Length: 425
Image 1 (cartoon, rainbow, N blue to C red):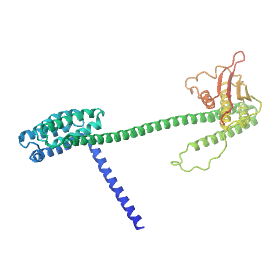
Image 2 (spheres, rainbow, N blue to C red):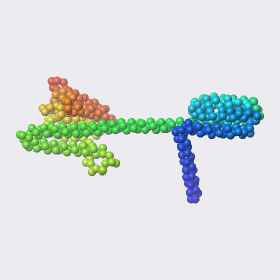
Image 3 (cartoon, helix red, strand yellow):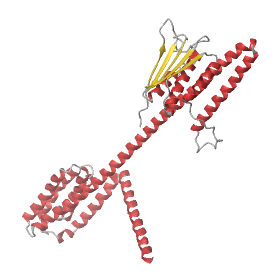
Image 4 (cartoon, helix red, strand yellow):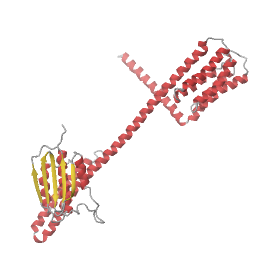
């Protein structure tokens, strides 16, 4: 038990140390992004100081020729360190600018350690430029080394040339590794950004589709019931003077239709309610969506509104999915609603439903052909979404919808819906 506790303590300590190091690196990178010039100046100042300290006399410890003039050593030290300020924007030109100073340093036998600063530039070349530029960098570093070895052959080639080239290879590999990591991180960030954009687009498309669906449902519910109420009110107005009993029946029908419309509208609004923000509503009255079995009730309501409707059914209905039944119901509802609104007081309607290779619904009326499609007069509501909603519903199930005036002399309007059988397993 004690060993487990000690292991957990060590793991927590290691994790805290890793998190601390990552935090420091993150702050350094953030500072570099905010103040790149200041960071370059600080780094260059550090190496210039180190080069000048070495030029003060320490260079003689490894020099092949200790008689090099001090002013030349100072100039070489500055030439090998000051260009570092531009290493990030122009790494290869900076290395080319350092190469003559490294060549003079090795030629004279000073062998300044400031030449090692060139590896910082090599790291930036591997990090920022195409990898083929590393070949040019290798040449720029190798030529001064070879010249110094030939000029002052005090040590072996392995010490004077091969070891610096190994350092060059290690620095180049480090730059490539950091570059690969940065590119991988950038690709993850870009992928996350694209996924976020796609998610927002999908949410917008879903919201638009939902708004369209809600508008279609509200149009079908409210438009139909208001049309029925209008028809009942008109009939009750004419019946009030001659038959008060018929007027009372019309008022009762208006009240019933209004309650049904409110119930359906309340059910739709309950679906849209935000449960996190709105107070808890009372339990909503649950009822299935309208189906083919509800067509009789729909047509009875239209007849009560004053529109004579002949309803015929051909064939035996198969087990249609609820969505297809709702589409048939809404198309019949919208077609009869348009007849109530536009066909005139003397119009009649016919609803034929045929079952076979799918379901075919034909709704015709005897109203004038122009009133169904003409724009509304000024000051009234413009053309509705009835036909658009019917076509949208039909397209969901790969069906067809035809709507238009009948040929004269019969006149009138016809809506024909065809939904193929559902072949989904």
